[in-house]
Length: 133
Image 1: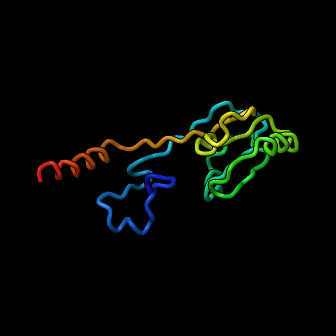
Image 2: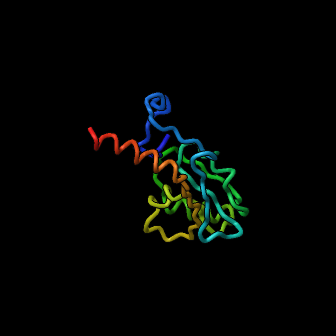
């Protein structure tokens, strides 16, 4: 369900939706990366972290999955970097905000949704029905 995060709708609410988007038809995910290294430690606190597997770049030496919405401890992350001889911590954009101010080498997985123009026209048309009322 869209949007993601704490404002998401439950999946069963789609029966009330005027528009249901499907990946590959209505939008595509564009994944990019920032500051990749040859040895990275994936650390994430998102739900269903295995969904990241298909987007992981080469060089991930270990995956550390914390509970959804968990906070990160800088010392623990430094210790993990040493333990796995990793050059950086690989994180999602969602996890990165919880590491602001950490003095750690960070690599990032960035996700962007490329939504087709037809979807925006459909939403605009829906909004216009309220302006006429």
